[in-house]
Image 1 (cartoon, helix red, strand yellow):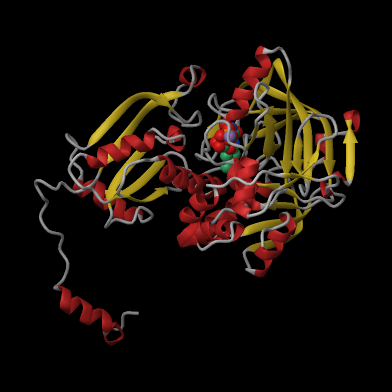
Image 2 (cartoon, rainbow, N blue to C red):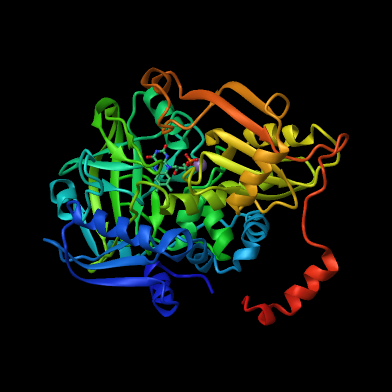
Length: 465
Ligand SMILES: Cc1cc2nc3c(=O)[nH]c(=O)nc-3n(C[C@H](O)[C@H](O)[C@H](O)COP(=O)(O)O)c2cc1C
Ligand SMILES: [Mn+2]
């Protein structure tokens, strides 16, 4: 049974003891960010908990944070076994399930239009020290292609400029940016609906690197096995998930920019302050007792590593045509974007590089900076094993390739400002850390196998658990 809304998912996280209720008053200016940082650092990649702030200072609405910041919770969200997540993703998304229109939705319990819609009334945190303002960090931006009418849902950071203006950062290849460019060419604003507080499958698909033209809401339907129910917006020709906690309706304005940023990014560094387009708010609708949802973005580990990591892994498995690819893992250190490790059963020398290049040729590969290819005896999720393969199986003169001037992640901290403005391109690195077949390495050293098995069987005898 799919989750009907955010609340059903929160109930499940409560039952699974995956969420901590923070009862005391917490300041949305900096204190909430510090609590999130502490929880992520203490819990680590696999042990951190989701957080539910009941009493944000000065607000009567709670704030739920980091709901999907472990792979386990993400899989609870998609209702599947962690070992099967990629297989399930590929199987379910083969058949998109278009959304269904409904007349009423919980997100319409309160409707504020025009001057009554005020962003400053919402419990929006300022997360890191030097952030340029309060940031909506876990939004789902819905827009339609002005030429084809096809829908897109994506997640883009949204800074509060003032009561009715949001900033947006959308990299050049992002789909909302492509919609906006088309609207701008027609001299028209681009309607945008920002839905907040949703069932986890919508987030999973909104951050996924599907090709342009794919409707992420239909992909969410595919993941949850039922159509997403949508209601009409009040002031713009768009539809939004009926069960959203909160919806901001607005328009991206052609020819208008404002200084946006800095913002503490998933890389662990601040993203720049620079002129970016704005979204002028036309309406805000919400449940009476809406729950605001956000994510703490900053040094790895963070929620970004999980949500973009898993969908990038699945999309590479779908889009890479080469046989023999076994597993793909996006590291947390690379924020779920920058470092892809791929294991492969290699049929001949040179194949590792082919795999690395094919990863860079996918939509998910566009934001990858480093691809490490390993044999299938290495677990790509185990960074000690990966490091071992790189340091002992790769030769610097033979197994490393730099590929020049590809589309790259605009948030790579080493990218120069001029390069970001010039279309966000950079060089990429492929490391083929698979063992050579024609001139094999010395055998790997392990104790005599029958003795080893015997010792493992009798491990208690040696006092080893
Ligand atoms: C928490 C979070 C914040 C993100 N913020 C941004 C952002 O500010 N700008 C951006 O271009 N992409 C951002 N992304 C990545 C996009 O959501 C992702 O690439 C998605 O595929 C974009 O949708 P699209 O492919 O339909 O454009 C963010 C992802 C996550 C998980
Ligand atoms: Mn898209």
